[in-house]
Length: 472
Image (tube, rainbow, N blue to C red; front, side):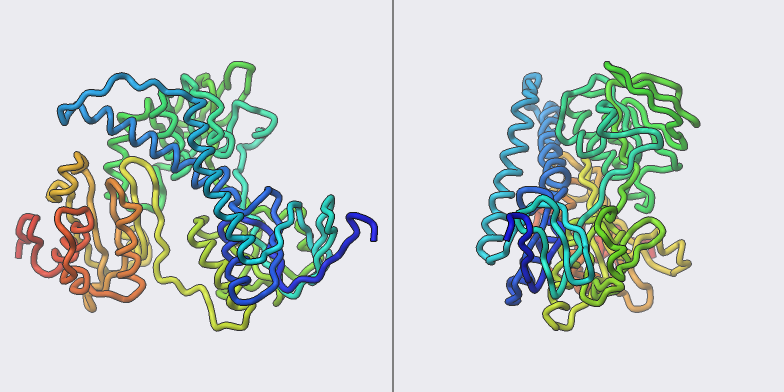
């Protein structure tokens, strides 16, 4: 057979190697299925590993170090002015990415998964084609669509053409440290990347078309972050739109409508949302259906309109989070294997990796008000936490949202240092249907930030040891 005309048979084909895709492939292989994983990159990891989650968190760790070194003066230790080697910073990020990528490749090989590089498209509901690959096609019993999403540009702009107008992907390649940078979008992506560049020395201006940052997150959780942004960023303008971006060789001219004044910046980061990667997939050759925004429609078992084709991760919409995609990938694999599995999570944790971090899960106060649902809320301020004070981060807060009749924990929100790890106890509490006594009566080590969750629960029971007495 001529090279490039080989068509293989496979039990499961997974299109896309991000967290949802490789989780589906790994779980399917663990369940004894023959799996082929197809991705446009050289190995599994997807945007999260190579151009998103991992690079941003690597840089945010460095930003946190710079912030802590500056704050150390209050603790009696003074460091010299930091010397930022931009090439060294990029190199450190690449070391992190390469190490994790190597580990995923080893796990792929250990499971006997065939890995193909290329852009797959459905020829039918039982076959995909891979143009330009030595193996031109795969006939399959089951398929998983895990093609992810891409950043949305502003109208009349092009990320690839207009190099100074950056997507999150371009910004995380760290092309330079611009003197003045505009961030368009007050969601977690814009705030995280804005804080990275601010720590490295850029003057950051941020505009958000809405009336608040981080829409959907409770105001009391965002308040400490807003105070920090007032110091870290040069300006934050709400209710402001970018009406025009005009790139030049040495900058970008920006016109605003709303509260901003026309200005010029060295670079502009556009972080206003993401769109699903469904174009060119050949979905018209299947019974897979998409909504009006292009997201693939699935049921609670990740099945599409074609019973043997599944979809997971960003391409299905909803909360675009790597851990959600991974869970969906595992569910898809288990359903393909004939196991009883479905997505029924009571709480999906979300973390904003700014400084301070914000983490929450389950029901929020914002959602409770919208649903006109009666709840009780207790807040434990971190100024009463011995560990928070020793860390020099007393501005945090831990709160619980509880059903007033059953005392069942419905939601948890935390703002402060290291909330990324603390939220897991809250997720477990909501997922298992715990009541406040379950958390309050669990002995937490002292002094730790995890104590704040126990003390927040104790506030429902009449008072916490390290907080003022509750008025009867």
